[in-house]
Image (cartoon, rainbow, N blue to C red; front, top):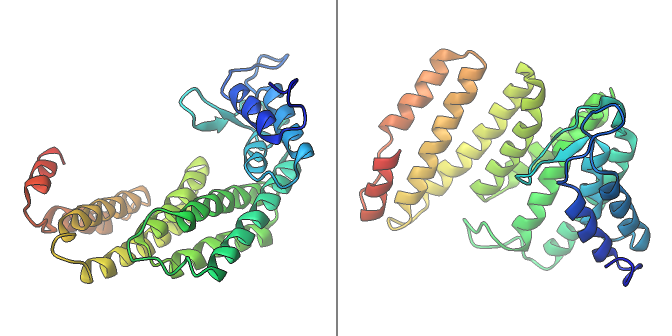
Length: 267
């Protein structure tokens, strides 16, 4: 395909994406990202420097993330392969594009969406932002740049605080936790706990203003968030707080409807 369309960024991106999940070992027998995936992501950017999807995908490979057969990335075993400066450059470039897109959406007043709307361009853009914040946090921490590390953590907190959609706040918390669980640092688990507390508060506000028709499903979501808070406290060995949230989840009333009754039986 790239022979027929050598200057098409999308063609190189698609080819790179097809190579990325293929297991590849270097001369030392260690798992590393497929070199053809790296080469074609790089070519996609050379062809079109504004081709946004290629930057985070290439950044993942530079930071040593190997795409698994299930589609999710995991750290490559060869630490010498990782090129954090190149990864940072890729994610910074992608971030500038996502931030520009957010400003465009603000100007179009698309951020004033109905409460609870979890779809559309705004949420899609938030997904990209959150994925990049967590990668840059990890990379700057690994590089010993604590000032830049804190900058991206602050971006995540600021967006979670002003995010009207509980799903958006919860997504930010979940994305940061994906990075924190790599190190199992208690300090980072506390940060995840704080982000989840923000998301829980957003859900409480949503429950207060919801209709009786929507309340059963939101109540189930709220109960799951209570259980998640309990799990985080348990990970931090705050057993009294963990018990408090687990009990709150057990005792939280779920309005009865035919659908929620079936769901309750599976919990």
